[in-house]
Length: 180
Image (cartoon, rainbow, N blue to C red; front, side, top):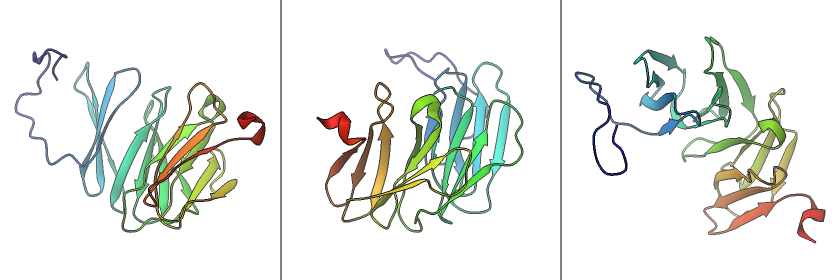
C-alpha cells in the first residue's frame, strides 16, 4: 500500500497476487477485498494480515461493500446476487434473484435509509430493488433502452438512486415529490 505521495507504507512480502478483477476497501479501512479468481474472493484484514477466502459456485463479476463495513455484495453471472456478512464468520450468503446477468459486468449497491435496500442494474434494461430481508425484488424500474451497468444511491438523499446504461443515459430515480 502507498500513501498519496507514492511512499510505500505496507507490503505483503512473499504474497503473490493473481490478476485482480475487482477490488473494494471497506469504509472503515480495515479490510481489502479482491476477486481472487473466477469464483473466489479474498478478504484481507489490513492490520493483522488475517485472510478469509469466500468461494462461490459461479463466476464473480463484481463486488461492493456496505457503508457500515459489515456486508459485501457479490454479483454472479448466474443471475444471482449474494450478500455476505464480512464482520463475522457468516458461512452462507443471503441470495437475491430476479435481475438478468449473464455476459456483462453489472454493479449493485446498498442504499436507502440505513442501507436497507439493494439496487442492481440488469441486462433487460431495468433497475431492480430488493429489501435486504427478502430474496425477490420489491420494485422494478423501467426506462432505459439497453443494459443497465451500474447504480448508485445518493448518500444525502437516501430516496434518490442513479442508474447508468449502455443506452448512453444516466437516470435519476426517486419519489415525484423530490423533483418539484
